[in-house]
Image 1 (cartoon, one colour):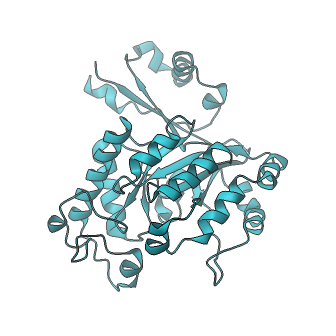
Image 2: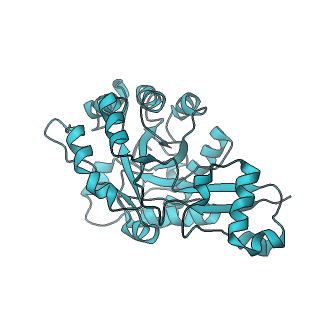
Length: 314
């Protein structure tokens, strides 16, 4: 039997402060994986983005798969090697077949990413995500590259497979459409570091003024691969320590900031609701709660979205 996808939009109309604490770069290296694992197990991370083209993606997934977190696809076209044959995506790779670095891409005066080539690699990374995890990503976004062509390709692939495209920080259109905003990353000093306590405290007003806010971090430990392939080195270890700190946990508790794993709760029905069930939106929410034992808070949001499009296909 085909499945009906139900999407509940989280946060609109609820006045409490909601925050998603996201860790990017799972799979970048073994050391990064171990740092993210610590930030999930002992810290406040609720959402993790995985780079499926990287050699250590499986290792990273095995570390975090049993935790109650959102796991997304951190789509990457600027580190490591592509999953697609490099000959098919010349706009994305160097002569050695590896991706062009984000620094090189940023230095170009024009957007050189070819949409069709990007779509091929994005789709390949999505299929690898499913191969590793056995499921769709909870969200679908990008790593490090600011390219409108890349964003278009991401949207196209997300639409093709019915995935939740989420691009806070980089895509203002997305933020306005969903009233979900990414908090700008901290300005780094000459040592590529920053004061995390000051950053968090300065973000409080932003969190208060938005329905749902997203803070993006890059916790991790260091190994030779990261030292030679990433400009983010010491900052990873610093953020890992901070995200597990009692100071941060106490601060979040003091201001009664609610954690969120997902921007949307996406559920699949194994049986289609009856006509009566879908007549009244509130009854739909009640049915969802009863069948999936969801906490009541999931149904208390205004302007939730019930996607009935698949019903037309039955």
